[in-house]
Amino acid sequence: MRYTREIAGMRAAEAAARPRPGAAEAREAPGPFLTAIVPVWAKGLELLDELLLCLAAQSDEDFEVLLLERGLPPEIKTELEAMLGDSPPQLGARVRGCEASGELAAALNAGFARARGRYAAVLDAGDLLMDHWVESFKKAAEKRPGSILHAYAAAQDWRRRAARGAVAAVGAIEDWDCEPFFMPRALALGEGPGAGFAFPLAARAACGLRFDEAAGEGAALDYLLRLASVTGVAEAGEITVLHRRWQGPNTAAPEAAEERESAARRAQKRMNCLPILLPPGSAGALAECYRDARAYRDLLAERRRRGGDAPPKAALYYGAGGGFSAQKLLRAENAESWPRFEYCYELPGAVRRLRFDPAEKGELALRGFVMTMVSRTGEEFTVPDAELQTSGHRVEDYICFLRDDPQITCSVPPGFAAARALVRGQYAPAPPARIRRRLWEKLEAPPRQGFWRRLRQRVNGQTNRR
Image (cartoon, rainbow, N blue to C red; front, side, top):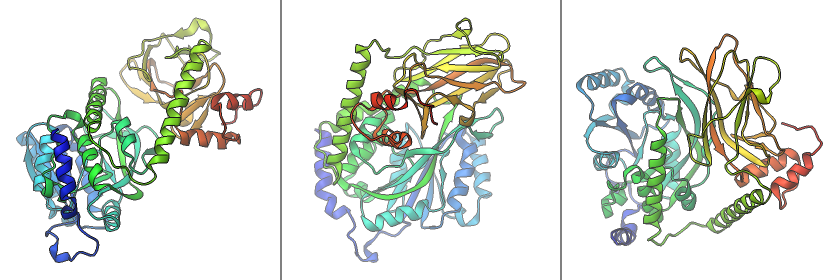
């Protein structure tokens, strides 16, 4: 009931809260167009310098930066002050600090209350911004004043090195949040809003809308969904953010992913109690989602009928330079929950080649596949995508296998004494519609029913084109 009353109050105040096109500038509250809110903590300080450089290079300087200092010890505060002192002069005058305590939702409430801009965006210290980040938001705001602003974001896998502050990219840049905002998709994926979203602060002033501190990790997603149902979302339609996804043993544990999923389910439960107004075009998108879900259900039923494994049986073969055999086969327990997978294989002796079989049968796809080798001294080597040989077809970050006995092979770098192999990714028995369309186009096959079966018939007996 509390959320129902809150939404009702927001809708009643929407007309007053949303600026009208052509309204006199004198009626707008003084202050910059955008407040960039950056939560700062000790372990992420080494990445803040790069973010500040991105902000200093913005083509539109109508913004301020608000640093939420969350429990920083004195020595870290001194380091932060020195970093700000070295920042470009045109940026330093627009940076403010703010003490914040409690969980992230409480800190964001404090930051939004102190923001002077007409819009506020929440940044992670690891984000990289393009020079038109602010400019893109402002153009979207001119089209639909008072709405949430949404710009696209790409993503790339990164890894922290042993030395403090040393980071490196370990994967190619790929699409991440590069589609217009669609509430059902946001509910299904459970991803909180990143640097590609800017929130109108008029909604907070008119209705007292706040981040729900009881929502835990899902507070940002909950805030986005509640506000989007009232103000709508204005699309910028261009990529302005590179989101860095951190890989390796020092990143978030599987428990963190489970907490995000649990938070997303709580947000879904809240929104399920409210009426939702969707923008034009949503009917077709919902129908496509239903068709994909039905195709996924039918595919799993077909696999069960023909004895397919769900989840599949994965195996790793190793060799010293020759071929692979059943005598050199390793199996491991999946450390993740279906459809994600993460296998850790202990390698015996000298190994020069590896072959990962994700399943025994074809007609499936893998997403975000990564193979990492760990030496006996603890050194890590992530195999570049270009060095992974596969019997499947690559489409974006998917590898689609049509035939049985799918394989991915790679070589161990010369002089690298591999002791373990870490393999992770996600099974995708039913890839999304855009991946299916691109695979149809790649194989020059018409889009029709029976996706996997007809693709398999087309390439049966032919050379597998990649």
